Length: 154
Length: 421
Figure 1 (cartoon, each protein chain N blue to C red):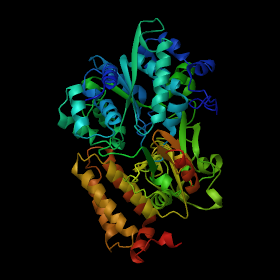
Figure 2: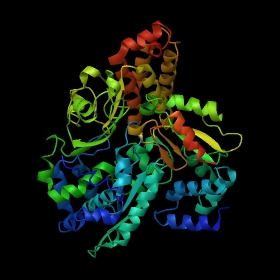
Figure 3: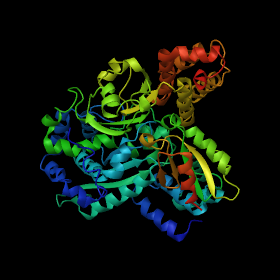
Figure 4: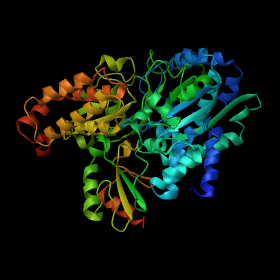
């Protein structure tokens, strides 16, 4: 079940579209926020709230990379390694995250502090290499700078 | 050139409606409303504006197709799914100049008779999501959006629809699928979105940068606008330059600026005095150009004559230390990941190409692998559902066309020859 606040929020979003199906992507974001990731409970909640079959909701949810299907760490480190970032050393930064924090792509630290997601271009190519931590952009990254940034996320 | 799209962005509060109004913002809406909708399309036609998303389609023509369809309501969608690797121009408008886009959308909506608009924003821009929502709320408060804009009886409702991480949703029919709450898989065309688009209604989809040109065109008129930049595709253009240049960033320059000038004059040349090796001039899927082929005017008409495309204007500059087999492999890894899986040549082909490139880069390439790459990519070209598959095939073919020697050396010496250097 979604919380009352979430249901109210979803009703407001629903009004922006001519039908309920179009509210599916925002509904999945809300469910992800409420449940932490999209598991069976989350899909059931979205399906009930919008009157959309669970199979459809899951089919759509699993198509997009920003919906998570397993528990994530408290902070999601999203490092870009696409071409502009790669040629300026993003792969070394991925190695650094692995060596210093034990963070593998797609993995989560044992203390659940960080998860690492390798991104496909986050639109920060002019200030590469770049990453997002949760919703915050960090650019012109170096190993030292990443170390400083991650200290801010407990 | 005076800044049109990037005007006032040094102002830390440029995204606020009052700051935007202070520099003359939102004056083009009342001016546009003095004209009949059709007259706005005529002005845009006279301006010669072409879509900035990559294809360069004439904007007024797209608009008139949607106008000619009698179905209502009509929709105006802004494609803010800026996903082509190397592209970061729209993010700047979205975060720093959101009211310019909103003003452009209100006018465009009026021109085509659309009462509803959506900005399809890529999920990877959380900052822009909040900024846009705030800007839209301000525009509603100022009666610049709503059911009776400026008391003139004109309706335009605008909302942001957030994508969730899928490059393919930049393709317009996939974008519509995603807006409607489905997987972002492209639709067969025809019917075109201008007839059967969002919610099966006539729909115009324009890029962020395209729509942001509209207020200025209304302000100065189509004739004056058409004198900026290249005669065949006029206007200002945002070039986003990344990679090995001294001063990477977004540059607003007249359309048709020489690629060489962008790199050497505006961006200060190659980093640390190294030599240029290759450039992807319009994003990673536009044909790569070697260092001696950069004297080309960067516009939609001239780039194809020089063996590439303007694409999104995303210039990725690579110096002499870069391994191009590795870059080609990374591009295919991306395209394999982003292939939507709907059609076989793309779904399978991108994976095969990636695997072959991976073994060549890792020193396990076999004799005949280059021919195999050309054969697989040749069997994809023109046979895929949407341009993603064509793009993937063209990346491989163009890297081999210009840098075959580097691929051969990798195979012959059974290792990455650049890692050595």
